[in-house]
Structure formats: C-alpha cells, structure tokens
Image 1 (cartoon, one colour):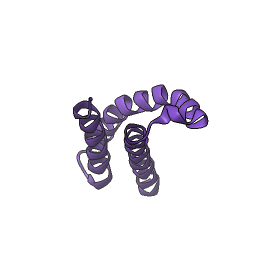
Image 2 (tube, one colour):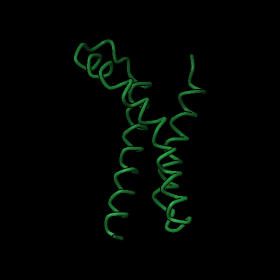
Image 3 (spheres, rainbow, N blue to C red):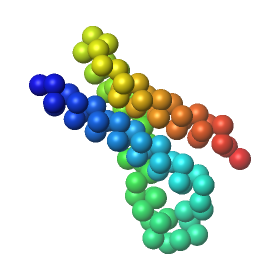
Image 4 (cartoon, rainbow, N blue to C red):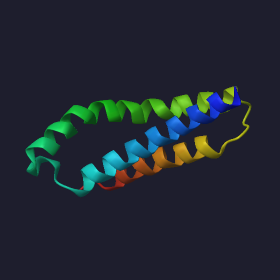
Length: 93
C-alpha cells in the first residue's frame, strides 16, 4: 500500500511540474510564430488549464485522507501550482 501511495504522489508532482513548465514555456516564447508549436499549444491549453484547476482539489483530498502524514510531495505539488497561477496572473501585459 505504501508503494502505491508513493507512486501516486510522485505522479501528481510530475503533473504539477508539467503544468508549470507548459505555462512558463508558453509565456516565454511566441507559440504562434511556429505552426506546429502553435497547434500543439492550442490542443493542450484547455486540458492543461483543467488539470491545473483540478489538481489542487485532488491534492487536498489526498492530504486530508492520509491525516496530514508524509506531506513532502503534496506540498511541493501545491507550491508548483500556486507559482504557476501567480506567474500567470501577474504576467499580464
């Protein structure tokens, strides 16, 4: 059981890092200057946004379900998601 929890937390952390990297890359380069990158961006933007909104609820559910034990990966995941949304909010040009 412990191994499954460890892998699930790691997967959630990797998804949070992926959401963070996706939005940081899309903010730093002009995705529409390249046709292929623009198409990939358009296909992934809405699912990644939904993932960024759903993941904090999943993380909080998992933290509460496990009675606030072993919080390293869930807290890191929340930090990455919080940094993502703060950068997106304050980076409006």
